[in-house]
Image 1 (cartoon, rainbow, N blue to C red):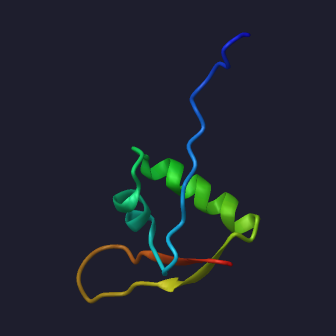
Image 2: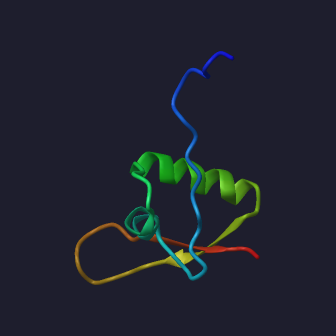
Length: 72
């Protein structure tokens, strides 16, 4: 048997509550990059596993964070 080349696949378990990409990174048991999380979120949105809920908004500086929800 030959070994598969390339990086090993990583699966993401989506939280049951509303979440942001930083929540996924913080709650994951595996080491995940921000880029990988965003790619997986886009794939899950296209496959209708997740839905976009809204944006966080605060009066402080910084970009708004997108909030997602898992579709059951």
